[in-house]
Image (cartoon, rainbow, N blue to C red; front, side, top):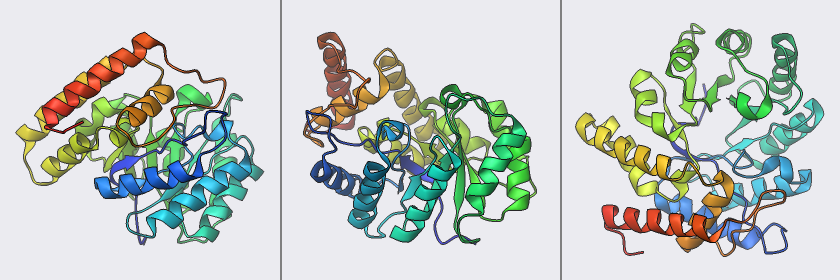
Length: 304
C-alpha cells in the first residue's frame, strides 16, 4: 500500500544550532547529506533527539523542509509531527504532506496523562487529517509523554485505518514487542527505540531501529542490519555486543548533548549547542566521549 516505509537503520536527527541557540540551517543541510552518504536507511526529523518540543512551529517546519529538499527522495524521510495539542500536530502532519515527506511519525502529547479513549481520539483525528494512503507511524515513548499506547489501542487503530503502518516503541521490553506484533491481523511495522535491542527486535519480527547514536556509529549499525538480512547471525551477534558495550559506556552522559558533542568530535556539525534547558557537557563527560569515539575508530579501522 505504501510507496516507502520505515525500516532498517532509521536516524532520529538532531537539530544543529549556533552558539546563541538559533537553528543552524547550513549545518542541518550538511548533516542530512552526510547521513545519506553514510548509507542509513531512513531519516526521522523533529523527534526527541531533534529537540522538537523546544523548537517553534516555524523552526520545526523549516527543519523538515531542509531535510526533505536535501534528501531529494534518495532515502525515505518521515517527519515526527507530535506536539502538545491535536491542532498543532495536525498542522505539522499536513505540512509534511505538502512538502513531499514520505510519511509521518506521531507521538502523544507530553506531561498530561491520557487514557485510551483520549489517545484514540487524538490519533484518529491526526490520521483522518491526511490522505488515506499516506503512512502514519505511532511513536510510543511513555517515559517522556506519560501516556502509553498499548497493543490493544494500536490494534484498534490499525483495524480502523489502513494507513497506520506501525509503531516506534522506545522502551526495553521484548514482551511488549511480541504483543504489538500480535495486536492485529495486519502485522505492524515495529521499530525499537533502544539500541541494545536492535538484533533481538529483528529476530522477534520487528523491522528496524530508530537510533540517535546510529548517526555517529553508522558503520556498526549498518553492518548489523546487513548481517541480519544476509543470515550471518554469528556476525550480527558480535556486532550487537559492540553496540551494547558502547550503549552502556554512554549511559551516564545526557543523551542529546552527547549526540551533538559526538557529531562535533567526528567533524559532522560545527557546534554542539542544545536549546535550553539542555546543558553543555562537563570536561569529564567530553573526555569519556573522546575515549569512546577513539575506541570505535580503532575497532572499525576508521581514520578519525
